[in-house]
Image (cartoon, rainbow, N blue to C red; front, side):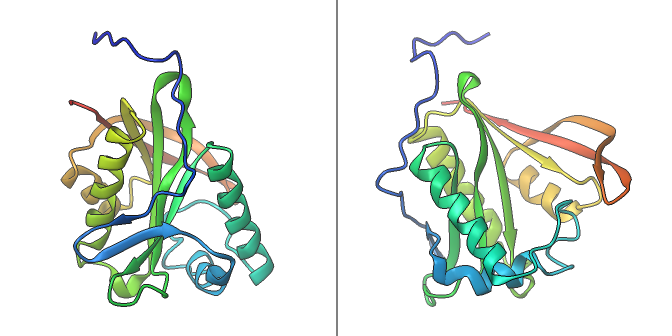
Length: 192
């Protein structure tokens, strides 16, 4: 067991909101004006196929989701970035973030989604690596976890490419729309 002399609990600070640039991407703060693109993503059966949550139905719901993300960052409870291409910074193509933090354990859960037009181009791997680096260096996380529907081979592949290891497989532990489904839990430890 690794013993560290650190504060008794993770104390993230997302003010000012951290912007991240990669080779092809900009990760920055979501705006209310992103609501139409969020609605398109979160109402898409293709995008939401393996995300067991109700689909977003209206602009008002999308705006509410953006407001919740904004409040979480202001309160240092979670952080979600909008993903855009450097060549088109005004167009949101996806989102990625640490949406659930377990501060006393220096652990956060990552979640992400990307518009299908941008799948299979390595963009989510690029975004994931950027926020892993941010999580381990700026936030001082000890570990990052991801919960994946086992049928989502693409997401599992992105995680494995980034060094995540499948640590658990839970049978029928998630209930949504009248049925139980399995989930796989992946994690990555900060080795620095």
